[in-house]
Image 1 (spheres, helix red, strand yellow):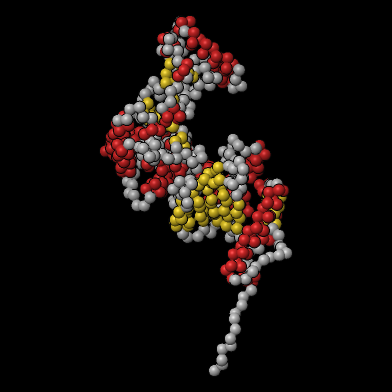
Image 2 (cartoon, helix red, strand yellow):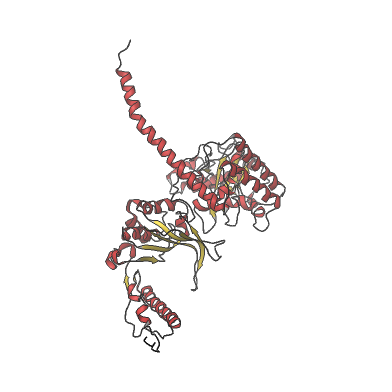
Amino acid sequence: MAARRAGQLAIDVTLELNVRVDQFYGMEVEEFPAKIARTALYLADHLANREASVEFGQHLVRFPIPAAPHILITNALRTDWADLLPPERCTYVFGNPPFGGHATRSLAQSDDLRRVWGSGYAKWLDYVTGWYRKARDYIGDHPVRAGFVSTNSIAQGEQVARLWECLLADGFRIDFAHQTFAWTSEARGRAHVHVVVVGFSKHPPSPRRLFTYATTRSQPVEETVSNISPYLVEGPDTTVAGRSTPLSPQMPPADYGSLPSDGGGLIVAPVDLPSDDPVAMGYIRPYLGSRELVRGLERYCIWMPDGPAPGDLQRSRFLHERLEAVRQSRLASRNPDSRALATQPYKFFHNAQPTTAYIGIPAQVSETRRWYTVAVLPPETIASNTLYTAEDPDGFLFGLLSSSMFLAWVGSIGGRLKSDYRFSKSVVHNTFPLPAAITNGRREGVTAAGKALLVARANHPGATLADLYEPLATPPDVIAAHAGVDRAVDAVFDFRRRRSAERDRLELLLSRYAAMVEDGRLQLDARRSAAPARRRRRQRTRAAPAD
């Protein structure tokens, strides 16, 4: 039997470190930020070496520096990424590309996007989407994973379908995602932006990792889910494209309010009301946009779609001066349609005013709202072009839009302004997958619950929608009434809550949307395939001899 020799095992920690700065390849459009990036990589390497020194009990330092990162000073959207690093040698693509919406980016950046997207370009695509498209083309069929910090607009509204349809069609799926959170910089004049983080590849792990935030400034909570939808919630790989008409025949159409295009002549502030002019006051109507509706602010307009009665302009100096100001403004307009309307200065440029009581739908509401705050308005209240309208003869639509089910749809499908909920006629309203068949009993249940909500609101005279829906001060009777609305609307969808109600509602809605769209396609295909047979029957009928 051999005796064990005394001694101590040793390890060279440098043999265990497999990540070096020269394994990083990057692109930066300006030289100074490229130097900052190179320095940051050296600093990150130094900090990692210090952690390894503590862990292994050895002093690890790479000096003199043996390697350097490869950073190319170029426009990443106008460069073939394979020239920097062939995709077969790449493992990860990641970064924090610049953001830029249509209203904020430069002409050169818009041209970058046109080059990258080609025929798939749309002006409302954010600048950051160019990196997603370039990553798709670069990765191809290679086992490369990609991830980008992005503006949260890429997971909302019309961008989702345009961005993700091409990625999904090419086999890419979301590996992990951070939902919207607020990101601030420590730099002077720091920007406050709302961002998401999205990782994607053709070989996603199972299950996926989804990081949710109670508020935009909360710490993330990690969840494991079976699939992450392009809207960054658990759900199917379904994208919702805008429509010109409602998907469900049960959904009444919505429209924009009326647009004056008047240079301000038809709009009357409260301090300018001609109270001492009874002729003019006969044409004054309340005029509400989203802000006025939610905050209870006053604003008025001159409303005479058929023109003034004979002699009224001579009897009212106020009306005469206002209409003359409109005429001059339209004559000076660059828009030929506005100039053509100068001969009728009393008309709104676009008149979409309902003739009966209607629902006023704000273009946006605060992210703190538990329900989308709509209101019933009389036809005498004129809706501006910042307020959406929809006729609602039996009150069903008011209950539907006031439900948690509808807010779940708006919150994920609608575009957002920062993190506020944002309504859209084509993307939100027209795509809402309301069942095509609703029993009379369930419809009446939603209508009755909506009327009970109106009664609860009326119990607080003088309170605005902003007052009633202040998160810390919503009256108990209003909350109870909304609970009744939710029960009635959930019954319409046969909804059964399992975990997070909002998440379950959205999963249900996305599944119903996908089924309704597919059913519509099948019906269209059936009509198209039946058309030749109908033509052949008509031809045989015409060719048959008469008796």
